[in-house]
Image 1: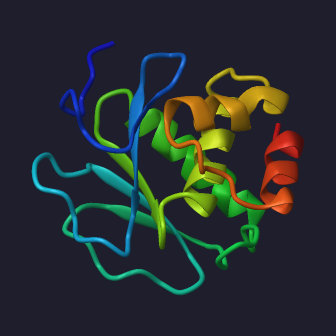
Image 2: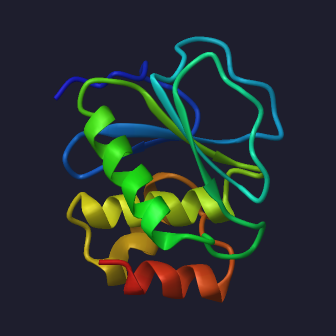
Amino acid sequence: MSQLWPVGTPGLLTLPSGRAVRGRPLSRPVPDGATPTLGVYLLGREPAATPWPARWVRWPDFGLPKDPAALRLALEAALLEAETGRVEFGCGGGRGRTGTALACLAVLDGVPAGAAVAYVRQHYSRHAVETPWQRGFVKRFA
């Protein structure tokens, strides 16, 4: 599978299947370069509109998604889009909620749930998945 995000893209997580997704803090401007073909935004309030298709999962800072089924649907859509497009995930700081969602995405891509947080911390950010509740959510995600 070819990498659709350019090599060196900040915040890139390559999954075991070879699909790559970008995580980023929404508190910073959109990076220069390639734009997403799908954004998944994890915020307590509706995000600003984007020029690309986007999904919003209601998720308060340091908490868990308000609707886990909506998260699962967004993750499944993101995994499918990442086969041929550029997917980005984002929250305020790009670590807790984004890291948790990326760990759940890794589970859908074949990483065992008990190893997904470590996988994302190794391949995305050592600060990913900030709270014990988020770690527990990933361990229970199947």
